[in-house]
Amino acid sequence: MDKIETVEDFKKFLSNNREKLLNFAVNIKDLPSDDDWIQDDEWDEVYKQEVIKNGKV
Image (cartoon, rainbow, N blue to C red; front, side, top):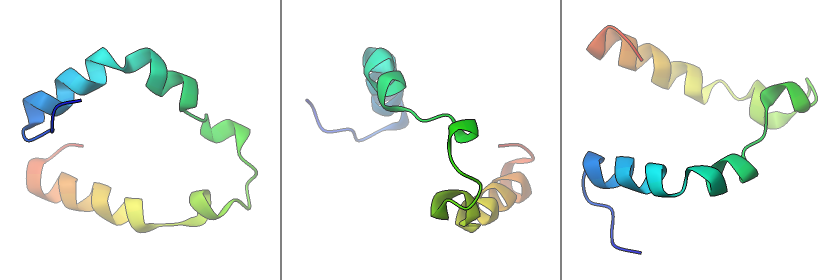
């Protein structure tokens, strides 16, 4: 695999590997409510910053 250096490279990677990624993806509904990943609020802060910077996520 080529090195991903730009957003376009990343988009191409996602497009080329969509099915593989979906096979590994986990639906949040399938996780227990006490799962560490669900309780981690680090991503909440990332989303807030994106909204502040771009007005959307």
